[in-house]
Length: 361
Length: 198
Image 1 (cartoon, rainbow over the protein chains, first blue to last red):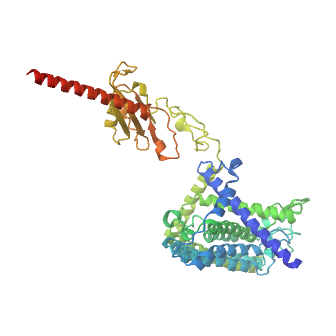
Image 2 (image 1 turned 180 degrees about the vertical axis):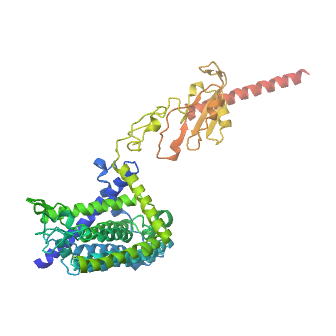
Image 3 (image 1 turned 60 degrees about the vertical axis):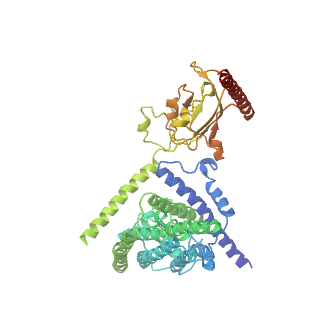
């Protein structure tokens, strides 16, 4: 019984976290966009408008759930749940700190990308079920975009996996810091592993610095992750100015809230995967320098959670910064970028990874 | 391929340019906007801080002679109906009752001979052209510096300026009718007398 109780608590905790993060994310997004545009953002609800998103949720809770008369009711009602659950399930395999992961899967990375792909199905269901031209256009664009961008994202990830030689996210995390037993070297030349040289661990043991081509892989992954979470400049599935709101045009109340929750959870999840694969996961950026054991002092369960959250929030911040700067890409530009630029570059990264693994490491 | 390469580089450099611009604004001063009049020489030089004017709490000063909402000083109105006639959108509705005698004088010495049973201005229709204020012979209809009049009902935007109650108006109408009847009777009597004498 206790066995199951633990799982329930973890599941509820993750749900609460994604809900809390969506509240925070929406507020942060509104404030960031406001400051970028020299406005003030929400100011009236609570001090500095901090209660604004709670007020929004209360509003969404009491709104009527409208199902269009011509909608495919089953698909329409299931879609928001599937969209959210696909993202929510992704959180199951994510490590937060040394030894802290809801589920320590040895195929964690594979699992996350498999389960995230189900989101496309939910979006297609939402678009088709709404029986609305804008919704179906948005859903089609979304499916095309997500499927296309999974390729460069996938190859960028494979180039990391080839260096790490594992799909277990906890193992990939552990390799990038002082808890690793393997040899790690900065740019492949300077040994920074635990018993290596003068400086051990820290930022230089992170994957993006272990092999220089992984910086490019990280940029490719980051761009592709923006597209996969339907964020600007790749928000053509929503494209307010063309498609009303794209695939979620017809949703109201809590169903709409679930679509929104999924979007913000997705932002967090893809950033977290990026952090784990490239930016040292829960490892500290501070190295051990001689007798000053900065890395030892800032490694642990508590520190791990702090570093993870800080790094993820920085990436989420960058996602918001990009959204409020760059204009939306056209469909053809989007596909151009994916197939002609990112995919060849990602292939190249994968090739270099192989060479790197064979000759340098 | 060469062209693709240069467009990619161009795309990245311009994107970076945009990103540096927005990040500067993100971390720029978020100071509240200072409320200074448009006549101030610094008004168009306010480049720092937010642009938002938090309206009900902060208000931009408007000139004292602002040309916003209409106001009528009924004591000075001679109910000449010129304003209603010139109004391009017909937002002024006046109903005049002739007085039986001169009622008094306006502040500029014009004699008032008409009562205004009704003097309504529909501010929802008004286009703020100010023509009514120009034609008014006694300058009793003016534009003020009041601009914020939000109402819950559309009918509340019809401003009623007449200070007469319906009873008073009815009384004045009766008086006028009586006077007109008397005059008509006197006229009839005079004509009959004239006819009789012939």
